[in-house]
Length: 67
Image (tube, rainbow, N blue to C red; front, side, top):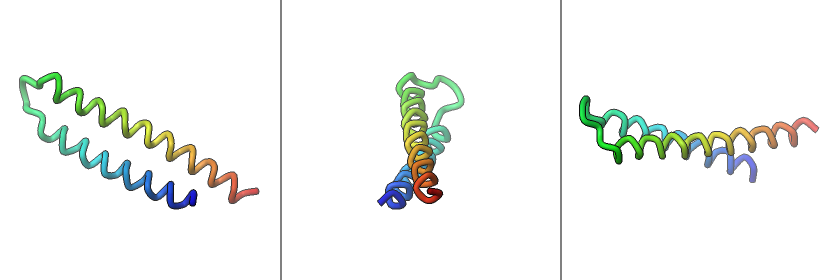
C-alpha cells in the first residue's frame, strides 16, 4: 500500500512539474498578467506540498523496511 502511494505521488509530482514548465514557457516576455503568475505560484505550492508528503512516505517506508 505504501509503495502504491509513493508511486502515485511521484507520478503526480512529475505531471505537475510538466504543467509548470508548460505554464512558464507560455509566459509572454513582457506584460505578464497577475493571473498568469498566480497560476505558476499555485503549481509551485502544490508541488511543494506533494514533495513533502512524498518525503514523509519515503521516510516511513525506510523505517518499516529497516526495523
